[in-house]
Each structure stands twice: as C-alpha cells, then as structure tokens.
Length: 525
Image 1: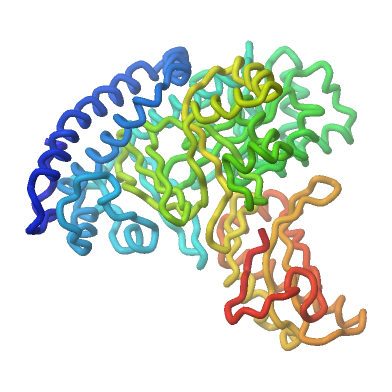
Image 2: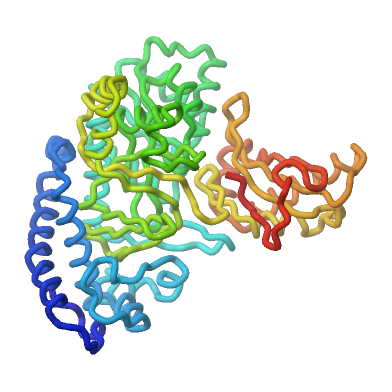
C-alpha cells in the first residue's frame, strides 16, 4: 500500500486527475521494485564480501528506485508515525506525488516539537533492545536518539563492509580512540569492529594507546579510529618516544569533523592509510566514507581549475570533503540552498524523513566524474589508478560543512551565542569589544584550533590588549565547558582542547574589513 497517499495528505483540487493518476501509477511500479532492491541489498550486505559486491555494481538506474523507495517510506510513515502524521497535517500541500512534495523536517520543527515515542513507528518506544545516543545542541540541551537492534545491526554491517574494503588488514586490531559514553560514534564503532577484529576501546587516551601498541606488538595490523586532531597528537607522541613505526602497520579512520589534505599528508608519513567518514547523531554515523578515488578527486579539485569549475562552480573557493554513499541506506537530496536532505530508508526505530541536517553539499553521480575524468588525458590515467583499488561505483557527496554559524571541533559544536556569553559575562573589558567571529585555522604545526576574532572599538595599548585577550579566552572556555557536554568531555579527555585562540583586530581590519552590514557575520569560511 506504499503507493497510496494518506487521507490527510490530499486536498481537493480542480486540476485534471490524469497527471496524479500517472504519478501514482509510476510510483506503484517503482516503489515495490525499490523495496525489493533495498531488501536484497540488506540480505547480500550481511557479509562484508556481499557489501563489497554491491558497492562495486551500483548503476545510475538504481538511483530512481532508491528515490521511489524513500518516497514509499515517507508515505508509510504518514500513516504509522504519529509525529510525522501531525507534522504533515499542519502543512497541507495537496496530493503528494513526488518525494519533493513531502516537506523537510529538522531538529527544531520536528524533533523538538514531538516526543521520542511519537517519532517511532506506531508511536511506541520498545522497552528492550534499544540503545540511546546523545548529542548536545547550542544551549547544551541533550538530544537523545534511540536506535533499535535492526538499525544498529545495519550500521554495523556498513562499517564492517567499508572497513574490509578500504583497509587491507590481515590480522586486524582496532584501537577505538573516539570518546566513549553516550556519544554515538565511539560506542557504535567499538561494537561494529568487534565483528571482524580484536578491539580495545581506549578512548582518546594517548598513554593507553601507546601501551597497547607496545604490548601486543607488530604481529597485528592496527586501525586507530579517532577525531582527526587526535591522530596528530598520537603521531607526535609516538615520534617523541621514538616508536618503531617501520616494524608496525598502522591505519587510521577518522570522523566528527573535516580534515585538510595537509594533515592527511602529515599523518600518512607514519600511518599506512588515513580515511574519513561522514555521519551525524541525528541520522546515522555511516552516511558516507572516503575511498582512494574520493581522495584523488579532492586533491585534483585543489589544483585543476577546469574540473573545479565544472563540479563546484567558477566562484567557489572552498574545498569540500568528498565521500561516496549508498542511496538505498541513506537517500540524499539537496534543496535550493544546497542544504543536504537525508531520508534514512533502512530498519530504523525513528524514521528520518527528508531531514535537513544543516550541512551544505553537492551530489554528483559517479558516472559524471567518470565523464569529466576522461575529458583530459592526465585526469584519465590518474582516475583509472585511483578507482582501480576499491572500485566502488556509488554516487559522490561533496560536503562543505554547516550552513549555519557552527564550528565543529573535536566532535563538539561551537555556537556564536555561546561564545558571546563567554566574551561578555563577567568580563571587565567587555566594553572594548565591538564584534566577533569564529574560524577554524590550521597552523604551521598542522594543529586545527578555533580562533575567536575580536574587533576592538578603539586602539588599545599592549598590556590592555593582553588582558582583554586573556579574559576572553578564559570566559569562553568556562562558558563552553558549562553548556556543552561534548566540549566538556573533550576538555576532560584532552586538556589541549581548551586551547582557544583569540586574535584582536583594530577597528575595520582583519576579517572585519569592509563589513558594514547591520547583521554580523559570525563565521569566517
């Protein structure tokens, strides 16, 4: 019955019924096919070899079936999820014939407005077999994300399949250095990796990791999972202890925030391979992941102006992260603002339906990249070499990051309003601050740190400048620790996470030059 819209979704109209009948007929054919392919992919993907087989045989025609399957999930949820039914009733839009006819959901308008049980199928939150992940918002309020047993098993299969494809380990030993506790990435990664490897959940503890490597020795192939900055701390610590890298084979998998190619190069001077993954507590931790092909594409975009203009646009200066993703697990779209819209189509306890996570992105079919690669002889050779390893033909996600003013740092989201509280609360020099903005900057040592740029109201002598900068740094760190559980946890596990940089600028200089807008711009891209 996935092809029939819910009775509350339709309004009387005077238009001809023929287009509606045609659309419904098309959906009636495509939706069952989409469900069948999705079921087959879940069945085959239960084994890592089956997962790899599917990832290497994705065809563009399957994208149409994936869209039909995502639409069928929305139609079913309109009947069986009380929160979504109420959400759609409040937004009547006639007969919803296409996936894009269903309105976007987000954290404020959907998650906050409806309780956890109402967002579950049949309005019921099971009393067993559920794991709850947690994330914190701008005010420090925790958001809880229940996940059922089937959902977790599907996530585990995706992690295991990708790991087996990208990291060629013979005797795998996973050192899980993500934060532990109520955070999705750490606990889920540890549970998934236990299916294919020896696992030690050290958390971000450098001493424990060093001890583990030395005790278990070079007979294992190691995979360290962590946030990107922590991998640099680990490399530097091991170097300082004159660790015998040449006797070991150590890989690295990271997520939680973006990573520059400079940092990847630095890490791969020691690690055999470094790859990133993309996910979100709101959705799932396994939305997309890097391959050798995507790393090649990203590096090519750095220097190939023609390719950059074709894919990103002539005026785009930012370099996105590049991932491949499975549209039958998470169907992705972008809206007119280039915001990423995600529908999780697997066996999830709380369906995510055209959910706007707030990230800016572009979506490109794999075959489009193939066409552009073959348009240039040098590109063609490089592409064939890069694509010959994992051989995945899944579509490509070009991710720029958050569209809002959020800075993601060590798995925590830093918000301008929290920084503002820290700058002004109890600060004897607050009157000297005109405005501020945030940035993430990678310094010469390849350390990525948040920078708070402050525009002064007037020039100040050096002693006052130093006192102002110190007061701002202390105040912001204190406030973030009090309102953001993620930041507080990062600070507890790694004291250097509190190294917030403060840069003072004369009026109208630095990032504030030429800014005469009524509204402040809080994020420096």
